Length: 410
Image (cartoon, rainbow, N blue to C red; front, side):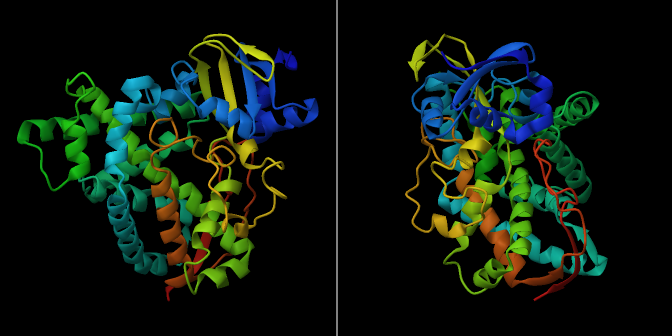
């Protein structure tokens, strides 16, 4: 029998955020416990063993595993993450075929060029908030790469919409409703664009747009326009969300200046640095699933359709696998074996068959390029500001968004 907390913990989860699961696992001396959230029984679990159970095989479905307020902003019904089995594998292949090493390299090149073009504007303004600047920069990067370039007016709309989907995914009430309204507007834009492409003819020079417009399901039928629009957003939105990791990378460079000096002269430790940023940064706290069939784990019987939350943040900070997990030590990734269950900032398990984010390598390469730009192509000051990170805000950021002043090209 696993430990059970009989009271409803909805308010406690909102209050504690990223530490909710781990703090109870520590207190109860367990890797899993049962409680209620939103009056619904749920099993919360953490650690590499839990991640392997959650991501290994087809034990879990994402259907019915997220509140509607979260689902409609991040993935939406019928999207690749909401599918299982053959349908999921077939749809995910669309994303894997788009995010090849060459395609990611092209995206990084676009991102670096746009960053360089932004430097004179940032210099003229004297003061910027990095998170705010990254929203349009990454939106334009994603749009150009995907074959949907935006004018300035469209860029302002799309960056606001895509940013709101991430920013308010963990909120309730008016903020969430407002973000969902913006998402609906963005979906209409995506539908119009794909519809025009299907009517006017698919252009071979824009492979991402072409693939979405021409994709057929496993039964050979064209992807419905509404679903094609959803998947277009599921391609663009995660690229915009990378900005949060970039802000945490800038924060790490500020807090650990010896790493800034080390990274200024070569790429040897660049990937370990970015991986440690991803491990330590609070991105999304948990991922939800429902059991597809009954099974047993650690003496607990998991009935069919049981709701489970896997603690991503706690697994990335598990002291059994990460020595001094609260310490920022990129060197731990120099000889890291690549365990897909101890390190789960964007999900765990295999890329090809499971629900692990297909854009993880994209994230790593974009953040690496941002770090190069921060340490090699510009100088700036970090003035006094509130850089605290609230673990009850989901997803979170430094409160100030990371203010930079006196920016100059280097």
